[in-house]
Image 1 (cartoon, rainbow, N blue to C red):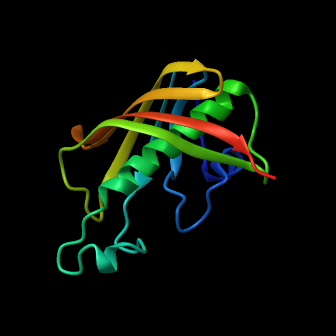
Image 2 (cartoon, rainbow, N blue to C red):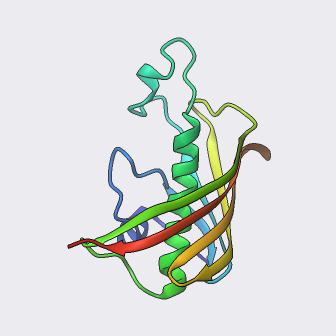
Length: 148
């Protein structure tokens, strides 16, 4: 079980600002699970439009943050890192539920576990919490592809 700072995260994800949504990995057990966090700041580029008088993190971005944590878990499990030709794609999102608004100042804890890895497709159980309260959950299916 290891943790990762932002420098190591950048080595394991092809995402960059403004769509990089994982700030720290608290623990990762390759082949099993990852626990990461996203510090939600009022300076996020989506808050001025979602919503100006009551900022709320969009649900799709919570799912994206979970998928990024899943991508790190995938690469750590495989013992590799993405290169400039690697792209991590969604294949499916099942059972997505949003239980609590996420607002500036929250720490979104991202818990992702591997359900299945078969023929290049990964299936994960994913949940995002704030202060122990469920904010979002879903089953995610993802794959890594090499682009030309």
